[in-house]
Structures are given as C-alpha cells and as structure tokens.
Image (cartoon, rainbow, N blue to C red; front, side):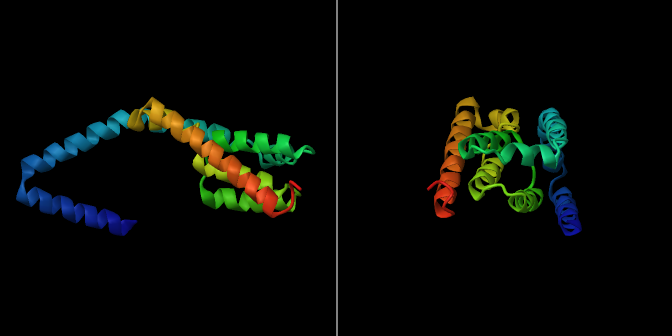
Length: 159
C-alpha cells in the first residue's frame, strides 16, 4: 500500500512539473467527486456497522431452520441486506457448516452476500441509475438462488 502512495506522489510531482494548471484542475475535480460521494459512503459505513452488530449466534440460529426452503429464503434475505468482506464471510461459512447448517443454505447466504447489494443501493443508484441498479440486484438474487439450488442438488439436500 505504501508503494501506491509513493507512485501516486511521484506522478503528482511529475504532473506539477509539466502543467500546474491542469494538475490543480484535476485535483479540484477529484476533491469535488470525493466530496459528493462522501455522505453516501458514510451512510453505507454506518449501515454496515449496524448490520455487523448481528451476532454470529443470531445468524446461525435463523439459518439452521428445520424447513430447508424457509432457511434458504431467510439466508438469501440476510445475505442480500448484509455486507461483509470475503475474509469474514468464508470463515463464518465454516462455522455455519460446523454447526450443521446445510451446504445449500450456506451457498445461498454467501452468494447473495457477495452478489446482491441492498445496502449499497443508494451509492450504486447514483452511478448506474435506478433501473440498472434494481435490475442488477434482481438478476444477482436469482443467480444466488440458482447457485444455492445447484449446491443443494449436488450435495443431495434437495432429493
């Protein structure tokens, strides 16, 4: 990461050497874009922090349903509204598996977690537009459901 800062600093100095006016204009333009998206990012950060307050036990308790289809729908829903990085989601999946949650439900949770962005909707909408964002989320939800059903068939949980 430090290497990126160094490269960026060197590039900025070189840019200043060639054309100060354009460099300042570029910096101002970049700052304005950052300033416009900052409220969305802060809102997203607060929302993610709130969602991460959900305890691991709450997720395990509600995903390990007796009715596998109810658990599947619940896991697709939780995954769609939750946002966490893969390095947290994958170990959580291992914990869910160790607690007896079926592969199909884990696949639904992780896939919808990575693909569907209910939490990121406001930010996506500002870049891609409302229609494209809704369409992307619906298609991602259907893909996540399809992947989880294929996992259920593969591991013999549906038959």
